[in-house]
Image 1 (spheres, rainbow, N blue to C red):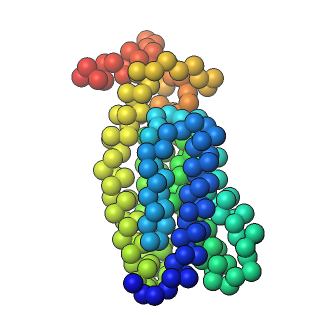
Image 2 (spheres, helix red, strand yellow):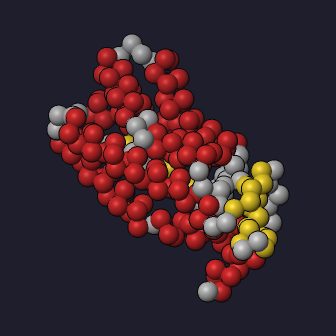
Length: 219
């Protein structure tokens, strides 16, 4: 609509290469892709997979997007407009704001040290804090306003899905038999971690994960 066809093609090619990195990562680990959404200011690859996937797979798939983009930059870095868009998109996408890749990487790091529920809350809080910094730290233009509006909308949606994600996480753990190497004794269901087998200690008695989750679902 603005006539900037060359800029649009360059910008779109960077986005496509970036999402291609995520897609190839998904093929490597045999993840199911639901859909790939290309927006005027970015892209999102949505997966149709269980929540409790290995953290190293999540990390590799998340980092392959920026990696492919960086390789693309090194191959074609002679164009000034291309250089500018590539650097801006790369740095912006690594910000810890949902749904950007930086937020996914932070969530993976949080899950290494905290429970699934705590990690999701920390990811949301980090996203809102970074969003506020962007809100007051950058000069506004129409594109930035559109991006901030989209991010805020996705953040609000993510907050609303918190209980849904946690219940889905619990249901997956109940329905599937998982042989995790990590083992941990906990007292509360909200302390359950990804890729970890739990034993619950309640009033000096021990219970398996499935016993506790079954009681929760029955209730």
